[in-house]
Amino acid sequence: MTAASSSSLLGSSRIGSRPTISGLHSDSLNPSSISFSSTLQGLSLRYSGSKRQLYSRGTGSVVIAQNMDRVEVDLSLSPRVNSVKPSKTVAITDQATALVQAGVPVIRLAAGEPDFDTPAPIAEAGINAIREGHTRYTPNAGTMELRSAICHKLKEENGLSYTPDQIVVSNGAKQSIVQAVLAVCSPGDEVLIPAPYWVSYPEMARMADATPVILPTSISEDFLLDPKLLESKLTEKSRLLILCSPSNPTGSVYPRKLLEEIAEIVARHPRLLVISDEIYEHIIYAPATHTSFASLPGMWDRTLTVNGFSKAFAMTGWRLGYIAGPKHFISACNKLQSQFTSGASSISQKAAVAALGLGYAGGEAVSTMLKAFRERRDFLVKSFGEIDGVKISEPRGAFYLFIDLSSYYGVEVDGFGTVNNSESLCRYLLDKSQVALVPGDAFGDDTCIRISYAASLSTLQAAVERIKKALVTLKPPVPV
Image: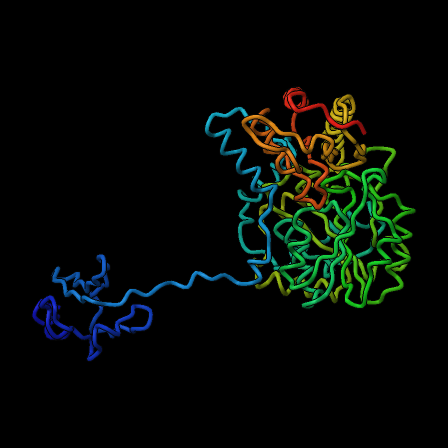
């Protein structure tokens, strides 16, 4: 298009005139509402301050439209998003990582991620999957090979019978849980969550327009749910009970007898379903044992069992989890996933088959990691048990210590301010001792802080020394 023809088409190119496109005045020009005809192909719209320029790539000629009103972008967000709180564990982990990258020697004990490499046979299976061309989409619910292997695992290790069409493999157990919540909850339903809880449970309920109902537990009772409290909180709106054993953040393990008492209550409420989060099942310290909730009498029909590969197999970055349950509910989860992410990584699924092939409960590879976790747990329990004013519930599983340091609250620190809750204590410890921990209020218990011992023993020893020194500088705690 020549300069002359573009001038003719657009009216006048003189600054100050009112150029038009196919009869439209410049005042009404809006890039989002104008459909350019094929005769304008080769023209592009540029912005320069308050001016918008139509530029002909063929000739370099410019036609300027002035005095065009500036349109403000609507920055509002969905009420659903505004109702969800950001994850404190993610925020603190990111902050600690940034400090380390800036050269600050922070010891990071906030993230729930094993410090071990993925076992070699699993990694090799992933590498071979790439080399052998297993790099395409898989079925939405996961490969038949992996779902069959999961069915075998659940039968042999958990006493649960499922068929492959009762399994959905997802991009991590977190996706499995949120899809389950979305699949079964209606607006106004209630989701019962024992506290301390994993930070995401209440937010997942809110995403589904459901109401989280928090059931507090106490450190003196090893953070285990009191069945009488559960029964007192049940209403006609109660739809879901979320159980996590072994627990994040407390490391508590529900004994079978207590689970049976809970199951008896659940059985009396037809609407009530249970999500059993069993992601830490293989990280458990004898004599504690794991019981799958769905294996209890009458609970298979109303339990959605969630598990995955991140924790026991040190596969956090592979992003793979799964859910098992009655086909009616699992099909709903599968439908949601088909519109969210589709199937999980084909490479990760091949690696997961290898993980399940390592032997009962992960075989030697997992038992080696478990031995190290137990040694670290024992060290931390002994070390913090020697500090005045600290309350401890010894973890029976997972790799977290959830300790009560509330006796140190209310202390004024020169140059810092008042340590009056778990968040300010964690900020103080990050500032004073350069150790990153997670405040208990993120998990629904402001008296405690969470320490992840998914770190080497030498790292934990250095962290304990730093924390002890930081606590000494506080005023003497109130005796407990």
